Amino acid sequence: MSYFKLVHFELSRVWKIYVGLMGLVLIGQLSAIWFGANQFMKELTQFAREKSISLKAASTHEEFYMSSPNGFLREPWFYYPIMVSIAVLLLYMILIWYRDWFGKHAFIHRLLLLPTTRAPIYFAKLSTIMLLVFGLLALQIVIFFIGAKMIAVMVPETLYDTVSLASFTEEGVFPLLLPAEALLFFAYYTLGFTFVTVVFSIILFERCFRLKGFFFGAILAVCFIFLHVAPYLVANQFSLYPSESVLIHLGVTIFTLIFYTPLNLYLLKRKVTV
Image (cartoon, rainbow, N blue to C red; front, side, top):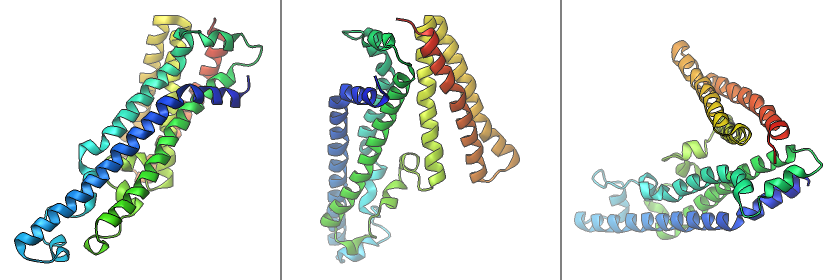
């Protein structure tokens, strides 16, 4: 079975859950944006009446505590859909392998018995996880644009600065999810890609050697976690520039990826048995 057919197969197994997850994020966050903009106008109108001033004057008044309709970005409940999405993806990152062994039809048996290389199986599962991640990331950007339009309709533009994508991504966890700098974006998501690879390695070790394999894979992962922490210690010791720290961290991440990918392919090809 080819790589693309395997990716299509993996996506077809999860699309119902994924669509539901996207619906949760879409409805939850757009509701939060609507509530935030509505609350901003309600509080602003009440404040203007109490001070007997215009809405424009009230919006810039030093005593008015809501500086913009983007205040919902600092509220924890706005991030609940994101937290649920992360939890589901982390869980599925494990289930994508174990459902093949412990599912109703033990599909992995048929895959491993195919007279072809097993590498497409590994890369298809890895690609599926990353496609799910970037799909939710793309949805988040779409939500930001829709949210900006909603705010523009609900709140007069004279009362606040124009809402842009940058204004959304500067709050909360979004500097990590959507960093403005291309180098940071590449570094963060290369690290995420490597994290998936490390988790896959622990799973494959467990499938090969059972409990002993799990502990060995976990210990190996801890060693690489320490290796990833080391650049921060070096940066503090030698006062490196932020860009230099990022490059060192990126180098360690790529080294980890180069180490784990052949290892995982070897385990899947030589050690995992039906």
